Length: 267
Image 1: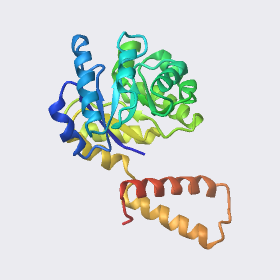
Image 2: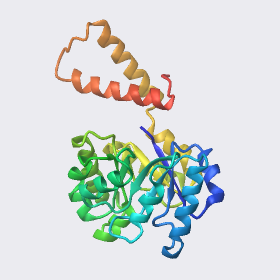
Image 3: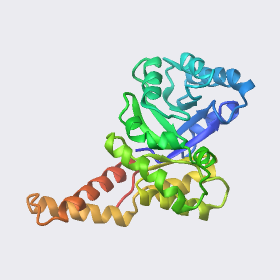
């Protein structure tokens, strides 16, 4: 259900506490792309110490094809503050399941899909044992495929992840980050993600959090409509009147769940 996922470099220990106190629904300590290869062992130990000492966060770990993956899962396994891991550059269900088993068989794994192969394998990845949610590594996907950042060009991979998540019975996927400080662009890109069915967004800056949380939450008007529809549905004995009632019922129930989770009241 979480909307905003704040990435924090694993080398920036001075920012961990501040990130935890921020408006982010979840924080992800990053020991992958945000860390130089030579600094990865030190960053991993810094993150592990913080999680063992009372901190709580997700961790983006290195992909299974690297020399760092095995050490990542070994050092993180069993830490009390580890809420889950985000597996970078996921391209197969086996990678998710192997990570899940290595972590003890109970730590949730977000599969970060960042390539053409990952997008094409998204459905099987979503159904993998241990898969908790899908996320879109939009920057690496564009680098892999040569796709532009244009909204239309990026609609296909986002929609693939949405459909795969539904097939795998997962929550809606998490969109990639918006780079830059322009809130108008962030708002527009977040609205596009919501329109396609994504229900979360990665971000790199705490200043982006209020915009992401607002856009991905249902509006007070939506909540009022949902309440009115559900009240009417109960009053008529939950009778389905025509073919449009079931889709509206599903939408109303989804809005109600999100409103309760995010504290949005009808207006």
